[in-house]
Length: 190
Image (cartoon, rainbow, N blue to C red; front, top):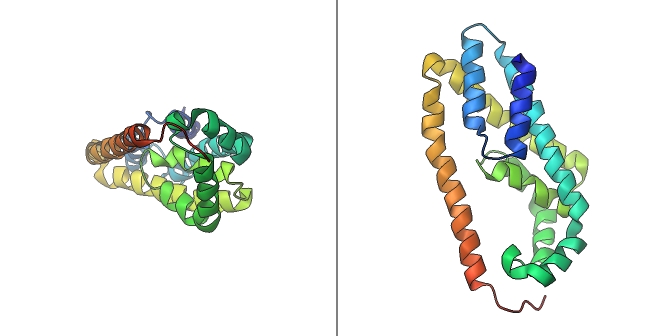
């Protein structure tokens, strides 16, 4: 499906995180190195798809909103590992540091998708979200596609190097979650 396929795969990668951009973009870069695609167009297509996926999660976060999340935290705080007070603290922190958080988050495997939800929940302005998200996304897709372009037939080395990093990040997130569940107070009083 060409460049449209790259955009669709990168959209899917953001919606269903197990699909790794670490495989999609280096392969697209390799395709550009072989003369089958234009590297700049590959980066643009990947970035558009990725941004559309991030935008979907942003709107899901916006739809949930801080008030609804606080109600969920009151009822299911242990499993969300959040108290209503922590929701307020997180929103305040995100309002101060949201731009940096979105930019850096778009560069970290596994966090790339998740960072869009708190941006929506905290009510980050759409223009700011798109600006910081686009900057991080374009940098990420450009790095991966360029690595695939430069490595050509050895593009799979990018995935070979990035997959362990992605697995460590996911493992740390899971361990952090489990730790919070175990340590969460039985009764959360906001």
